[in-house]
Image (tube, rainbow, N blue to C red):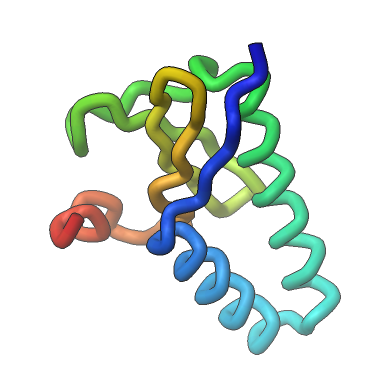
Length: 101
C-alpha cells in the first residue's frame, strides 16, 4: 500500500527557507538540485514510511530520515498518509525547533 504524502504548512515554510538560504549561498542551480533531492526523499516515504528512526523523545509518533547530506525530514504516519512535519538542517538545534509546535 502506498501512503499519501502530505506537507504541513510548517514543512513548506522550511523548504522555502532552506531553498532561499542555499540559493543565496551557493546559487540557484545548487538550491534547485538540493530541493529536488529533499522532495524525492519525502516522496520515497510513500512506499516505506517505517524505515525512518523513531523520534519519540521529541514527540510521540514522530520519525525522521536524513536526506540531501545536511537535512533531516521529520514526519508522522497516519492510517493512509505520511505527514511531513519539518525539514531541518542537521546542525540546527532540533529540540528547540519543535518547542512551538
